[in-house]
Image (cartoon, rainbow, N blue to C red; front, side, top):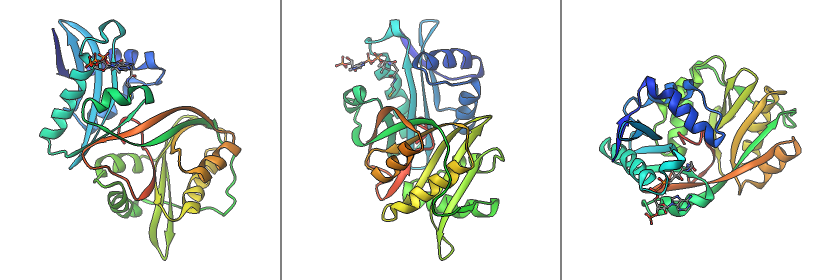
Length: 279
Ligand SMILES: CC(C)(COP(=O)(O)OP(=O)(O)OC[C@H]1O[C@@H](n2cnc3c(N)ncnc32)[C@H](O)[C@@H]1OP(=O)(O)O)[C@@H](O)C(=O)NCCC(=O)NCCS
């Protein structure tokens, strides 16, 4: 009845339409980007000839990320979601991935637990228009020359080599990236993907013991995005960061739970996702 195929360009309009039934605000460019990064890791579920669901995955060596899971409403509760998730998990495992991460809506934690994932920490998804001026001065804007060190730093703290993703983001001139350094060594960085007057802040990776570092990074990047419509996702345990963002006018939209199948990643740092679908 159901079968899974690799997502192709002519599936994009279906994928966008289905994803946006969830108010995810996606465009064909989002799926194009996913396929560019992981050509064989994006999937469409068919019921006979009818497209009935989507899911995406990305591999970073021994780690991978799963996301964008949606099944058309009329096909739900018939094993389709489970099939798509298992298909993507098998794909990643065949690529040598040992840890798979995802962000789950809280009501779906059990759904993923039944597929072998364990809950880690919760995140608040925030929306707002920035009006921030840095209280501790500006940090350094990253240059192309900093990219290899940022990737190495990210690998150390995130726990996987996200080079293919980070290079694409950091070499795009529309995007922003700032680094915090001590004695010229990177202790944290934050990036933002900018689309017109909208921006998605992340990844954020900062030394867990230097909370002000994460605040400074976020303040610095937001001060460059005044007036932009901004999305970001922050661990709910980072009270200081959330307080600053609430003061700046950000509101919590919803929460997600980070879950892992395999050993957990990003345990010794303050980590804000690049996106919910890529980790
Ligand atoms: C989540 C979703 C993909 C599940 O798809 P589905 O085809 O209904 O799932 P399945 O039929 O494979 O369900 C597998 C199991 O999970 C359970 N389950 C499914 N949806 C559930 C839900 N919303 N809440 C709790 N349990 C759920 C099923 O009862 C089933 O249990 P069983 O194996 O004991 O029978 C689907 O509900 C959906 O598209 N939701 C909207 C998009 C979304 O929320 N995506 C996830 C983002 S994290």
